[in-house]
Image 1 (cartoon, helix red, strand yellow):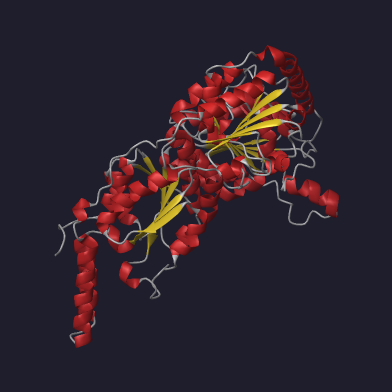
Image 2 (cartoon, one colour):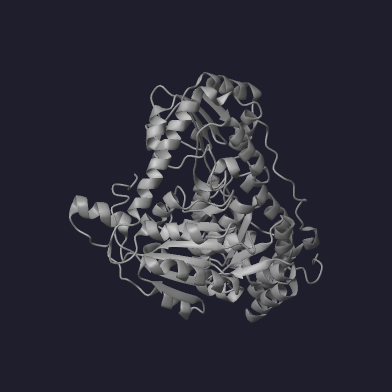
Length: 582
């Protein structure tokens, strides 16, 4: 029996997305998803349309990391979905809860050569935690709710919902399409059978469409840390003389408890290194925060607590840790906790909750006070050495001098987005995130091109904050067109391009080892003029002395609601020689 007249799957799906607590939908338009975009705006969602599908997913990824709520992106069928794959994989490795909604060919035309029709589930499934295809309008809401739950459950990650075009449009429109198709076939027996089949198919698609609402949103339930394991970790710390605490992104997934985690880390008093999304957890400066010479410290430590930090390439597959060190690994994944190095204590669960519990009754840090003082002295010496490098003579601007100028200029509420190889990594040595969840970088996948999307996602979650994107000139080429998105949506991002006319991280070692710079040479491109062409403001800086005034001007422009790009010509340096990781 036909469903209620006017049932619209796009509106139903938009309503379900809003019910998840999502406030912004990131997209690149396409005919397969038009009803969803219209429905989203009518449901009160902000619809931010970008210039590349990957940017939509990067934006959703950033929004998820900073808000703790699933980030949602919608793209059209076929190439819209495949263009998003790199960003999906980046979210998977970053353990970020992202929902990608992909438009798809009409249900009755799948496999018949329809426009942009591919087996999207087979293409996407290896890159996500869960993937499903909606078959009826009433399934859209429940599937959306299930997708969000799966994205958050256990180790978070991206999910995919495939939505055929004819599930999203008004029922009357779809009936008209299929009625016209049946009439066009004529009145032969075959035509009559085809018409009957199409009417029956539409009846099934729209049957009880008004019931298609998902269950109410519930926060994910995570078991508390095992008290016995917390006690064992306390015993190890009580006997330690050279303990270290490493905190990674997983520890700050529970956005609502980040302040409690920071207080616990401060109470523990253990020398602490932060990585990934955990950067900024302790603010710009804190007595337990260490930033430099981590490898040396790890080799000397007698107890190492890895809170959401696996022993992957970033820790040289566990070889950075001394052989005799006792290791406490707190991780949502047992496999990651035990990767490449068998811990003394394996605590499977929320690493942030584990550290918070550990800090509720901290050991006396007096035994490791000399160790903490030694690490602080090493940090200070390294900071001084880096600062001295910034004054090295050159034709243009030393990259460290540029990063120090941004560090001095950026406001207290700033969010830093790093996108690049050599320049972005240099910035991570110098920039101090202003607080928790105010730092975004390519992450473990090393994905260039995150900058534009990450900035859009950050702006959605932190409206009114200063959003800085530090681009390497190679990385800038991937998402520079998002300046146009920022102009159209009034998002005043401040982009800074470190322009050394090179894929420097690759070139440095490639030339030294292979004696050839093939494929690594760029131009001193006028990126500031490109930004102006998109409707933003652009500034050029060729000398370090001009940096403070240029950055102040950029901030003034941003306060007017316009995006601005500062193109800074850099000198080439050997600061990060030998830094390529495998």
